[in-house]
Length: 551
Ligand SMILES: Nc1ncnc2c1ncn2[C@@H]1O[C@H](COP(=O)(O)OP(=O)(O)OP(=O)(O)O)[C@@H](O)[C@H]1O
Image (cartoon, rainbow, N blue to C red; front, top):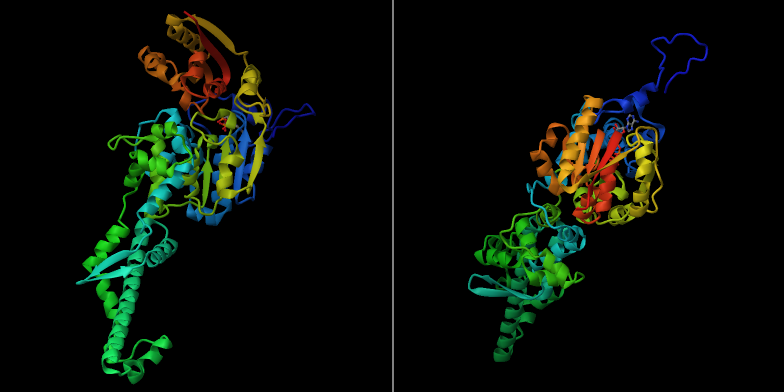
């Protein structure tokens, strides 16, 4: 909102004049931390933030359209407007620690300190800084892996077949069907293999007790028959037991009496039953289940039949290899299969840069939101190389079917009109169907500087010095291929600007950006053109690209 004073009088304290608060907020210097925008929230943003919709809200829009702003203000609004969700807690998931640091001040400045900010790694409680090659990481992100882990788990849950339980001096035989009935009932009774183990134990004891009773009945019948053959006396008629048996009542005669409760109690403590449970339903450790799949070519072939042999060989790992980033959702999946659903769940979950999530990561996030109340923001044109879905439908349908509400944000508040125009062709190549965003801001025309191969760092330093001299105090960022970071840091670039690998630039912004060697960013990893698009759209004011002359 701003006031236009048409009568020519001088503005009072209550008038909002000049460029207006939005323009003021947008042209303010960047600090490296995002600020709240509650006073200047725009109509299309506010509509999402204060939507009464309690299910899944999806927000898409080009770079700088305020998706992060909307996501965080939505988190604050949910805490204020939906007490049930607030009671159960709000979780905000971001792609990496750098991004979480960038947004860390927004919610506290809105008075909300109880929101949990986390990466997937933190949610699973797995600490790793090892990454897989992209092909491997992508494969590990596919939901086939969830089916494979579930399939492998079933091997440890009373696989089909009859079974003999040693009780005292006797072996009680259970048919395959009896074991399977106990297994199915245990699986249905409680989620998680280890918690279900106790239920299975009790059901197994029931089955053994039934079998003992049945065996005893058979034995007595045999004795009756033998006695009748030898003596000519029908003992059943004599005792009336046959009638009772026919009516399904317990045998009343002293010879037929079994104290089932006592037998059951004894069996629950019986070492033979312990051994049977251990053999049929061993206690498991989640990491071991993942290892059992990924270290065994035979298990990979058996449980991932849809993958090619070459794809399966990418998944194969050594038993002592460290866990990788892409293993994190597998470990989380295994933990839920083995120990049951996570203890900590949330009433509302917000996901930023949601286009980055693999199917396996979606599973771990949805698992933590039983109410399926979520706000998801992202832009598939900015998707990284490991992302498994190409659109929202593909990402969400396994969890909520078509039940999500899609909103578009159409105006960029970061990227200038000039920068947006300069990346238009690139955007058409990487996301032909995407609507073009317009910008509220206008700035300098982006520049390109060509440097010789051995002089590119010098060119970056020269550009940074020039920008700092012309615009002192502004936040500068140098975005480069990941492999370039250490060289730039060693050459002192980090004294003038933040040096950010292109793979970690999503969501961030700077007043001035220098993109170093776009060709190198494009070829550094699959989908490199999308990394370049992200890098080129991080500046609020000016963009300089340093291209390197072929040697
Ligand atoms: N209503 C607003 N008032 C003030 N500033 C705003 C508003 N909306 C967005 N901004 C600013 O615009 C910039 C871009 O916003 P934001 O980071 O939320 O965009 P985004 O859509 O998440 O971008 P990206 O796709 O690059 O992650 C930020 O500096 C943000 O503070």
